[in-house]
Image (cartoon, rainbow, N blue to C red):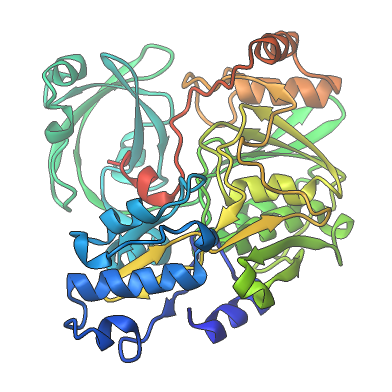
Length: 446
């Protein structure tokens, strides 16, 4: 590990679960070069990665005692062999994937994320703003009913649905038909284009009894998130928002600094000077342990709220969970939805030839020393996610529950009954697909 790079990242509060900077490794002094491997050959990469894991992997004491990195066909196979039982999260990207996910935050497509909700139905989880799909009028909870005149149910039945949407290339044209939640049907011809993945969606203000409530969906933590958050909080400040709902239901994590920004912009003076997070590395790297204070990062406006409502599913992971865990010792936090994914650990990206490896390097705890939530953070009001309405609509069960909590200071009766049922049965429900990183999440995009 390039210690200087990591130390600088820590001191600037830039350390991340899937971070935006990388630490290089030297090809001149490691054991792979001493063994005579060609630089960046498979054997060279495997050996260098194994050396890195022995030094910097959070669970390095659990690594296999006897292993020959040269016996593995690629880094992914080697990583699978090295994983600790607790590790669902380490992964590897190509440099191109890394740039696309975290830096440029762009991809070629129509601009929507999809979910198969039954054997014969595809629904849209979200639509990126100003994408071809957005400009055509497609929105969250719409059902995709046909591609080039062929019914989606037929495409799913014969296994050709994925191919029917075409390659991830600019200029690919398809005629798409969709149905809105209220039954209206539309057909438009769309051409794939470069899609910018805005990380804040559905920003709006609810006027409730004696309350002005800000709402937004925070979908990821990437390089543009700081600016996206500022747009939302500027609107909230201008409209004198008194309460806040942050929808994290599909947020698989990313840059921790923007989790810090979101939390600080929400709580403001209630967390100033307090510890946002503490990083704890493995025993041989304990000199890198550090507490990081709450910070506005790229933020401008702050709301100084005494409490916040957060919406979660099993797909709420990593930096999303850090917002919840870090705020809990300081303000009232109400979680509505399902238990989160359970990732109280993070990684510093490590550059290796044309790849960037994301092996777990540290765990995170809040100012009270609380962490290790591998079973997820449990909701105060259990409510199952359903794809039935657009962001912020009270036809959506999670946002409807948030409205009830804000107006009545109690969970809806249905949520309370669900909580009793789950408690007695030991059930952890989630209707949403679980994403442990942005790479997995990207697979749902078109």
